[in-house]
Image (cartoon, rainbow, N blue to C red; front, top):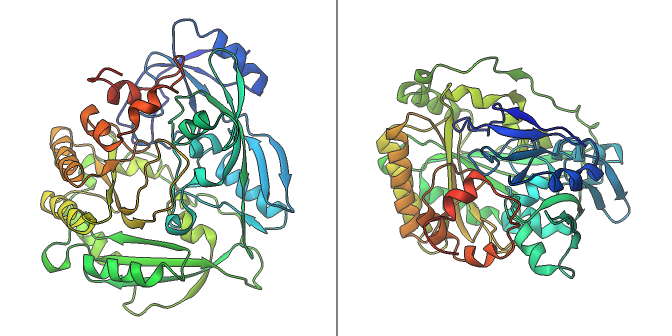
Length: 448
């Protein structure tokens, strides 16, 4: 059985939260029942590649099970595009496997990084730039094997252990250990995409471009100048893409071309440097779209080209704020969020705006809803940063929205519970042997 090691270096991607854990790294899945039976009075939580930003992947003074070595392929039906792999396999390695099998299959949904495990993608029910057409990751999970703390290994699917299946998708790793999963892959003509980048002037332009693009383009998203204000509020670059057949040879596998060796000083991100970058970045795109054929890495994973890009926010780390505002009041609420951020004069080079579709996930606790989602990084400056995030919470709450647990590290229990009205139903499926800092924080204050 894998030994437990007391560690303090199991950090989330935001690097704000620093806790002590007992960490185990099993090499084979048959070690997992032994680890669970030996946990004594401590709770456990699975850990993948550590790309959750806040505290949903942390379990202070308790056990983390590092799943990365559990990455074996159980079966790949290349005729029907059904993939069965262990939960520790990364999306990167799934993409490599697809390329090795001829490149006819691709991830049906992918977040903005390929350095995420399959189990993490299911536990957070990740979404991508094609939510309006494909929904969430959970929409493509055919079945999964779930190990509970009492030793039961359960097969969960839309037809078997259905309620537990729904609770596990988007369940933040709290319903048990996802050991493996079967998923339906997406048929594609190859590794290339046709893409366009369009510079636009304000938030209304963003919504107009979105409306014009959803029918014909699989992937849409916008980068936003978070410092713009007044008539230019919400200006940015709108990007859209779709898979395309190309006679070009397959692009080489992309690895990080640059890695930040140390944390930036905290003063490096300020209004002056941010304004300079935003002005430069805006000029890279034309108002008249020019179509390009590019490798999929360019569209889906631009930040993966920079290893440890999270170090740019300084030693104190950073918070990411991602919320979704439901359709109807999303335009006004998004305008209010952007105005609040612009007035504060803070933010990051990465500010992402996108609309989400109405395709419901099977996940009971899935984050997306039809409406608009905004994601933005904030260097941790202590009380001023937390105050700004609380003001953004108030706007989100008033509009009937919610924050994304995979990105959160400080939202109040009352706000979380208001945003996820089904959380009481979810409690019934939480395994008593599993917990996280996030869950202990957001499930308090009201009897379950």
